[in-house]
Image (cartoon, rainbow, N blue to C red; front, side):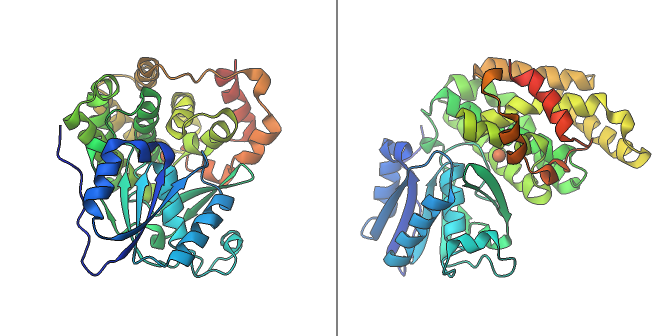
Amino acid sequence: MGNIPKIKISPNIDKIFILTGENIFKKKSTKLLIKSSFFRKDIKIYKKKNFLPDILELNKIVKEIKSYKPDLLVAIGGGGVIDYLKIANSVIHLTNIKDIFFLKKNRFKKYKKLIVIPTTAGSGAEVTPGVVLYKNKIKYNFTDKNLIPDKFYLFPELIMGTKRELKSSALFDSFSQSIESLISFKSNKISQKNSLFSIRIILNNYKVFLDKNNYEVTKKMQIAANYSGKSISLTSTGAPHALSYYLSSNFGLYHGNSVIAYLPIVLEYNIRNINILDKTKKKKFSYRLRILRKVFSVKSNLQIVKKIKSMIKYSKINIKLKKKFLDEKKQKKSIKIERLKNNPVPIDYRQVKLFNKNLFL
Ligand SMILES: [Fe+2]
């Protein structure tokens, strides 16, 4: 077991706005962290209520920050909490928060320093310039360098003891992010290195991470998540992410579990259709698959898919969805076809319908 998590706050800082989640706030380790780090400081704690970060709650958070006027902002939570505060801290100057959907220039300006303490070994949101926000259950992506947090701390203590379903979501999120980034044509030597580093850690540690509360393994998984965040900062995410949001907002699945539902299906589609790519793209994709096979220690591309499926099985998450609840109109609306373009082999909605056949039974 580690020590009591603590962060150092400069003596010039008096007022701190803390954003956290209902469940994470109940944890003893979170309370200890807050007590030991913000001793003798004026703090205001806001607990996020929505399952998915949306514009209405963001508006409330922004109002709280404006009236409190903190010197520093701290996010202690999962991807949703982190995203909320990343974006809230960058829209204080706007008179109407809904302007973020219309403005192009100076949409984001950093208000105060933002410290992020992730409580899942998942999203890597502590290093990315991206934020996900929902409006009427439709997902919007924002990317801006002003959204990158100023500092982050990784404390395994805050993650240990999390329920299996959430641990799975976290590990599958980083795992898929790293794979999506790696196979993207936008990936370069650096992002590929970051992806491979995180994939290797996850493959070697996911079983212990899920089954036990091991301090060292949890720490490794946090680092893997952090590197997956670094890799998607360079490439953005790919098709499994683009398709996943429909499941998160309509089937109540955790983010990473929605993403992993699509990963093997999308990967297999890419592998089976490699020959439709032009010569240059085929060469690029073959190289990416080769390094992926190496890190997976398998001989064929389809064995990568097989291994991912066995990881899903091992996690025991339920991603079998009922066909009768599938609303294809709604699904189509939720997908940003533009985002699918990060996938090596082009995907249109007809293809998405074919993917559905494997997912909705
Ligand atoms: Fe993600």
